[in-house]
Amino acid sequence: MANIKSSQKKNRQRITHEARNRTQKSAMRTAIKALRTAIESKNADQARKLLPPAVQLVDRLGRRGVIKQRTASRSVSRLTVAVNRIAAK
Image (cartoon, rainbow, N blue to C red; front, side, top):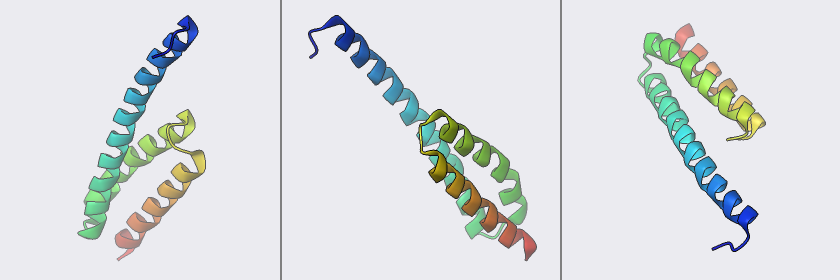
């Protein structure tokens, strides 16, 4: 355990930030998993409906630094391409 006051405060902040990031990442993974399930079942309507909230979530976490910006961009791109591919069929 930290002995210095500033280290103790930083440790409390770290715990709070880690908990928040964990929750947000979990929500993102859940949204992506639901979207991927719709894509795999070739359900174009449901995939189109689930894409915007998933993209919004991934982009927000990328902007806030929870995940890397380029990783977020790549994920959004791949999900969009996959949805467009099944929607075209």
